Length: 179
Image 1: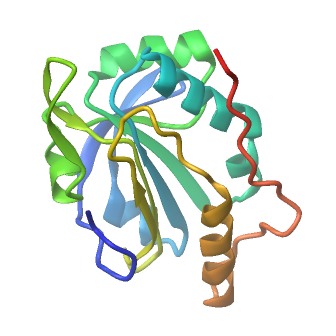
Image 2: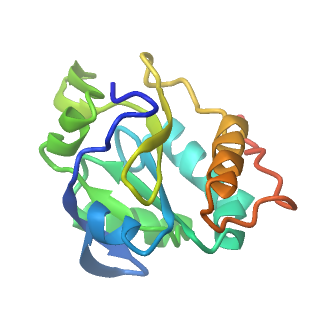
């Protein structure tokens, strides 16, 4: 797995934002001085992934951090992403890493998981404007959900480095439902 302090690999992936398909590029996204939070997950519509992404949607903390982009990445197609985002009212971008090539660059790919090949592991990376990884976490077990409190600490460190992220008044707790 790409560790904190290492350079994040460059990638460009198709994405769905507000029902529209576009392409997102990590280098372009970080070039304006902001940060990108990457949330890798195995599949749209799977119970744990749905719970995780809906919890992040409900937390809304990324909406109050203007220089932070939140991107969720799985191996699903943009067609599946469009339906998933629509059904669960997800407003952050869902990126399609259909062959898990980006997950492989981050060294977070299952060779095989639940009878599927080349599936992204559940992982979280905070990338700064220089594409340096400021926070990294990956689950060995796909059903393990991330804790976002350490992400807040990493965002605070970025603020200390001159990245304008207003996170003082934001509760970074993510409440997972038991469904």
